Length: 296
Image 1 (cartoon, rainbow, N blue to C red):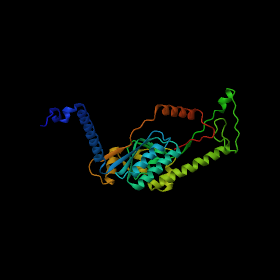
Image 2 (cartoon, rainbow, N blue to C red; image 1 turned 45 degrees about the vertical axis):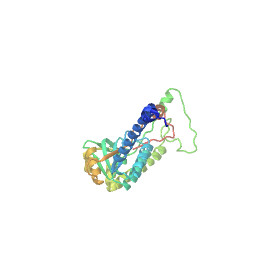
Image 3 (cartoon, rainbow, N blue to C red; image 1 turned 135 degrees about the horizontal axis):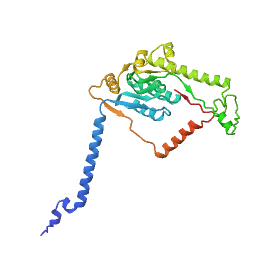
Image 4 (cartoon, rainbow, N blue to C red; image 1 turned 90 degrees about the vertical axis):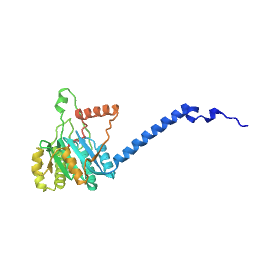
């Protein structure tokens, strides 16, 4: 005669309540994760518009060019808005970002939207786009190159400090803050500025499809309002960021409100920010004699 065990007939949730509760929690967590992943996939489906932000002084191009390259390779990104709010910056980083935007524009539509200021290096980058939007009072243009040479020779003489520089060539110490520029040094540095200026003018002329002579007449360092820039052919439209987004969506044949893919915000660690601030101060107050800071 067989015996019955009431405990064995109880459901698992009563026999192992703690284990059952843990399994329920794990299942719920999995469902939440799966739902979030599915939502992200659904959100990413269909064409999106990428956004590249060029803001402040242009001193480094690494972060911007990396994001631009990522947008270029992303097949879900139909077009890109480049938002420029910058007074310019160092020549080489400005050129690097320009070339990255140029490659991007060869792959998909790129529209530029100017903020309060998009001058010098900021404008240099803008001409890589297919179309440029500016507000009526945006300050843009400032096509030119600048080299700041600081001279502290008299101050050092006053406090009784002298400096000697041994070089392997007569132009190696050109631009040293510890001596005045000799005429031949001034002429040498001017040739560098002139070459960079010619490259700037040629880039604008090609990007805006304007005669070189017309651009050269505007390339005296002056800034223009957005309205003046439109009259001069330096921009295509007067409008805000929203107008630029709408135009980009039209170029990409996107109907309705477009999905926007912006660069994730990242903040460098505190130690790196403090180190960069110290380096910036050092560059401003005591630049090395051989250091040239050509600025757009």
